[in-house]
Length: 119
Image 1 (cartoon, rainbow, N blue to C red):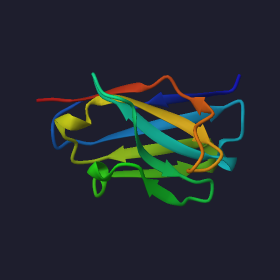
Image 2: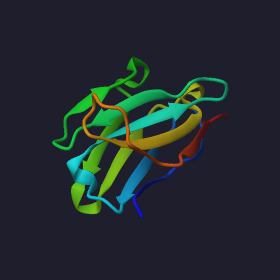
Image 3: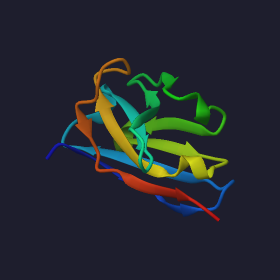
Image 4: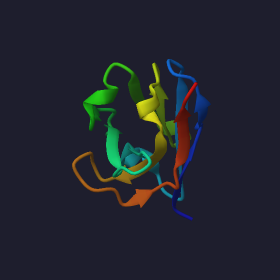
């Protein structure tokens, strides 16, 4: 079965950190770009970061620059989103998605993992 599965979400205090994981199964994830998106309550889903199969990184939103990073471990078919200095505004459901490259729309989505930043 072709799928992406996210994990690592949870409740964290402002200023804290979380690392999300996205594991691909049923296809070789390292030949595709992978993006992280998020959707906050009452808002549209927005792109966060994208990493190409070769490791090039592009930001889809400037609000996370200097705080979030994306990386991939092709041996584990896994992409990570390291989130530092979290703010309440980062509260959202975070989704990973596979794309041909970072300019194309996703063709596979994960089901999402909840991140809540609150004191």
